Image 1 (cartoon, protein in one colour):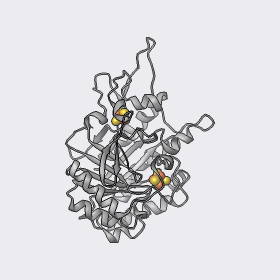
Image 2 (tube, helix red, strand yellow):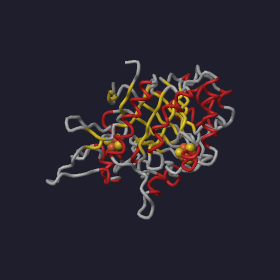
Image 3 (cartoon, helix red, strand yellow):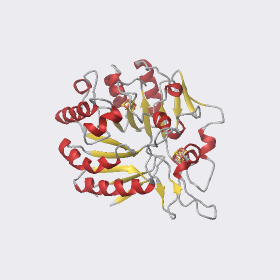
Length: 336
Ligand code: SF4
Ligand code: SF4
């Protein structure tokens, strides 16, 4: 059974980029140093910002990201601070290299999930996207995390470079013992936007390609007993549109102090909040909040602004469908 995971103001999520540096240079990396800075937050700032966010959004789900967050030597301390502050769940998103002995310096009692990024079922597909040797490093990291008792999740970002490889993922997920599979759709952000310029082949897949490949693989993986999550992307005519910026409580935090409520705004200085020392302050208009309140027939305003090629129109000028908020997810939970 597939169910849509609707937004809730009562389930806040904090996506905390504690640094932007990374050892890899993935083709579709969404980190944009000109907008997100090149800095690394000190542990005092990390702890102070975690406290501020915990007061504002008690029991939020917390995801540590980068860049590569395990490059930060103080990540284990940040995890302990977050646990002490009562965050509802703690996830580390990693490329699998697991620097600074992170598996030895934290425990499954403190970290709910370690989430690994892999974009192919083989080195031949994954490594041209994510970097030479990254398939072996990531799968080795997953095995080591499993051996230590951590829950593991795997994120596969679908693009034209690996669409066909998706069908080979169920066998790899079973072999690795993955607990949750997240299929992401490539967006026009960061490096993907660069790769989608006029003289480069597009990385984005079409609606038909997405639906033909993703739905069948999601069903197969779910039958293996693994929870599968993927973005909704396209709304049926009778499905309501909601903008997470209006009806959810998400914080996308960057080390230069910018805090966004919408990930599609991250390539622009549209953040509606920012950290000034340890205080979270509201920025002046125009910012992303002004966009969230626009009601358009195409659904997501930011999609129409930055990736209008996702839209098609009927002969009378009406959009053929709405694009869902990029944060709206479909879930196949084999236990329900
Ligand atoms: S591992 Fe993540 S942060 Fe590093 S280059 Fe790849 S997508 Fe970007
Ligand atoms: S992706 Fe679109 S719908 Fe979702 S928060 Fe951003 S502007 Fe709103």
